Length: 248
Image 1: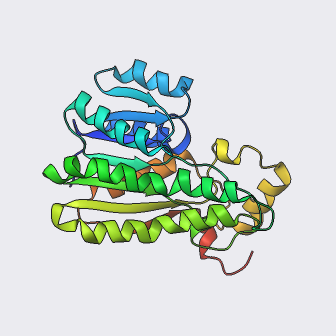
Image 2 (image 1 turned 135 degrees about the vertical axis):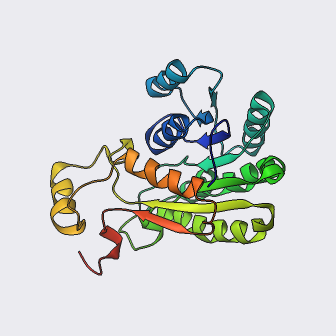
């Protein structure tokens, strides 16, 4: 088992939603976290108040900027003297068919979801390789199955899966494990715009368990992948069974 006590995790997209829930789970297990996001949130500040500045730091900025991404890792490692866990949860919806979106929208989707992994992993590698570590990428069931009018989002989320498998294979000898979570419909700000008709359709017709997931559901799965030191290169889906359906 990979004991997270006193270990440091850098979490992008960590000031709200799934990233924040993973941070709270790690803190509850005795870890330390650096929360990255584009803006400060009350929820993130509440974690600082609860666990203290000795265990929680907030580093605001845009990880789509390669210079910032590297600096984020460097600052975290310098402040805490180590880096053991990297979670890339930053991202957001990118709606539209390919004929509806601009080239800028397409490129920005990669800049936020995919390219940061390249820069973050390269910066984190020397630290992770010292004693071994865990990397977790947050994908989506949209990266596994077809979804209407979301070609950019599906593409970037799907790209994280072979990327993780490649990293897992290449760095296994250094005891660096790399895994992927693929959440389905999780009740966070991401789905805040969903109307009641769509929600009811999902519960009655698309999700076999007939309930939406929570950020805490995803965090529990994240902890399993982070702490189990015999799992690497895998994808764990948390969607109430939605993606196993052939139609619906």
